[in-house]
Amino acid sequence: MDSFDRRILQELQRDCTISVEALADRIGLSRNACWNRVKKLEQAGVIRSRVALLDADKVGLPLEVFIIVRTDSHDPHWLDRFSTAVRAMPEIQGVYRMTGDIDYLIRLRVADVKSYDAFYQRLIRKVKLSDVSASFVMEEIKDTSELAVAAT
Image (cartoon, rainbow, N blue to C red; front, side):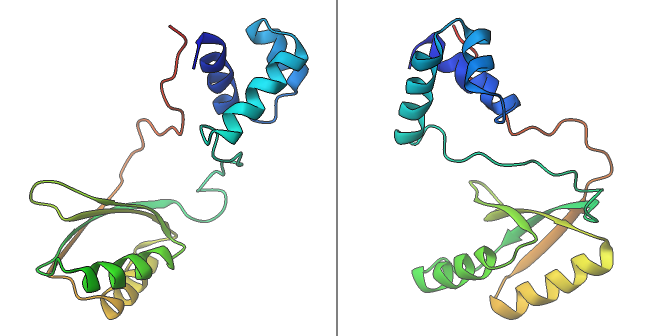
């Protein structure tokens, strides 16, 4: 990946609806060269998808929650049940297996505390957890989907 590819990725992360002509102008390539590079980045899986980022407040999901999960069970059967359960819950935006004292970190968006409680009840019915602790986001200081791929 060279500096042109990195600049393409930088621009597409900011606005994936940009035309190929405008993208080519911004990075200093011909339209065809730019299009070929975008296609190669897609085929290589560097560009996984192009999506619309929604305003959570405006779609009725203002409450962001981070959930710390600890479990006494670390066998493959438990992990399969846990993975199946969390993948099927649309409120969840991310699940991460962690090092240290935390086994898993879950990030989700819900309408309010009552919705969080309903989510929590569904989760604990699906899989046994030894400890669950939730923290509600009071203020979002920075949230981005952009990766730091600046051209060097």
